[in-house]
Length: 335
Image: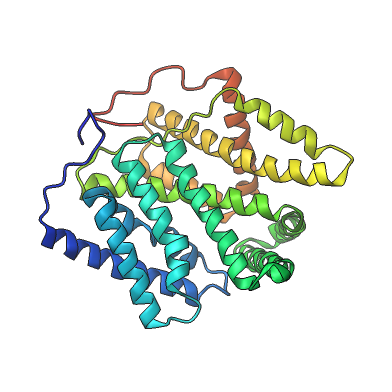
């Protein structure tokens, strides 16, 4: 990578760039179509596919720039329009995958900080949701019904996730998991906008991390550690949102709860970054970290505890400064 401008040098010919773009578009379309066919069923494989889907486009955008990336996204959308895959469309692909992938590719190509690298695609995903909601509504008069249908879709997904986790756990854990999932479903009805924004932020961060890791092997960029450093003044936004969430008046309470979800998602990523920093300082083997992640993902009580703990660590970083000690030097690592 060019240290002066943060750009990836492009040495490929136009024919090679076109071939890579076409291949990436076909892979992304296949993953998008598979995800659309499983949209009505909670399936961990479908969730993984949704995260992996933009990655081929991101890698091509990093390697060949926004011009080739934009043409690639347009080609993929055209393929979807011709294929007429049930539940998938060219417009949905452009809004949900194409534009966020191009933004990610641009940010990673220019070596933008991880916060904006995740927040810009997340904002594009939120805008895509609003546009798709308007298209589904068919006009302002139908927005209410479309919104209720979208909330019902999320509720159905949470219910299926609850049933999935109940099938994994032991009998003793089933009641606690069911109670936690039921409370989460009720909370999601009241905080749907905040839930959508928070999930989009987490998804964009996950895709950016995966793309950074793969870019080190495919486009000769260094693999940076996942870092996340919110400004210290952000704590006042958290305090304000928490105060509004405790307000007795309904509208302020809803606004505070939704804002609080988004802010907590940001601090969760900060806590995750601090945890990664500690793991690197302790030089924990990769398989230990992978096993810990699997345990957290597959045992609901531990999942809730880990999310709360990481978010708390992110909030406390304002006062404790966990990463004040310099991280171990790594060759060429970027933020």
